[in-house]
Amino acid sequence: MLTRLALRLRILLIFAGLAAAVLGFLVLALWVAGRRLTGQGADTGAMSGAVPDALVLDALVLAALIA
Image (cartoon, rainbow, N blue to C red):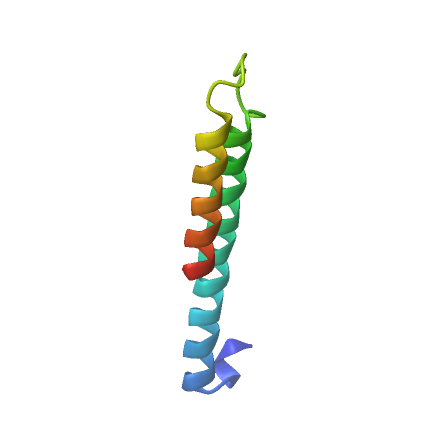
């Protein structure tokens, strides 16, 4: 099936798949980091580090938007 496509189109599909995979890994990494920073991933006890964690989460989202 792919042999009937032009070489340029096949290369475009390879890079489109690679871009989709990178975006998927980025979303997964941000989701895991967000759960960990909001305290859903571990038992945090007291709210001792709530403000720095929120700032780090905002920084992660900003870095993802830039990427």
